Length: 297
Image (cartoon, rainbow, N blue to C red):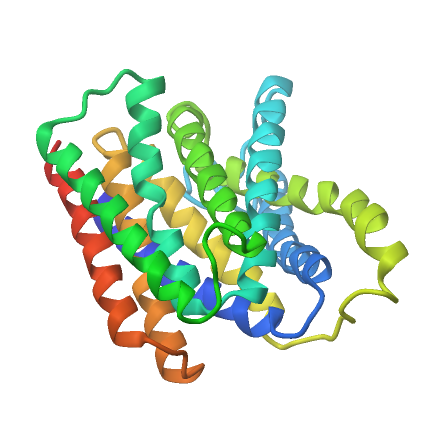
């Protein structure tokens, strides 16, 4: 059951990334991030009000229970980590082709596995070492394909923003492993969404609003609210799969990152990006390495 939820989560997250790319094309980054979280907050506010009013039964999967002060602070910490990751990846996605964004993003489970090895003292098997080595080899080869399009993996700041965002995403996944084994899924989803919106208000006020006349202008896109909607559904399915007692974070992380296949295909078909065959082969190599990481368990 948890694997089916992880697969469904990957599908929704694939379209979430596509809606982000459509919204970010020649558009201001921070207002889009803020408005998409506002859309998610409005939806989750409805669940909180319905739960407090008794319209949703306490034993329902849609019920949002009250939380302790400690639990709120734990979610605030998660929000800071995730927002830092998002800010990096949103700026990177705006300036990078989807067929470069997707393979970099697909390396996330490797960092999650290495983090579990360091933090949770999990042992890496020989097969996992081979899988990790394959990922590094194909990631290097992929960087050579990026050079053909003028994207130097050493000097391009947006490539490094993408890598940083991916690493922070792995930190968040490891934190989720701890968080969701002791907290209600809907409560995490709801208050995580609310704190995103609250924390983005000072970010907008300090970093975007004073400089808005000098930066890329903001224009409304129909895809913006769909970013929030598809993220909510994808995250709920992901959180729920992690919360199940027999779930494996390494497998969930791999399945979740398989959303890059949807993103890659969309970039190839609709954005007509270059060197698709070569980058496709390297992406497959990375995914084979990720599969070995899972089989190595």
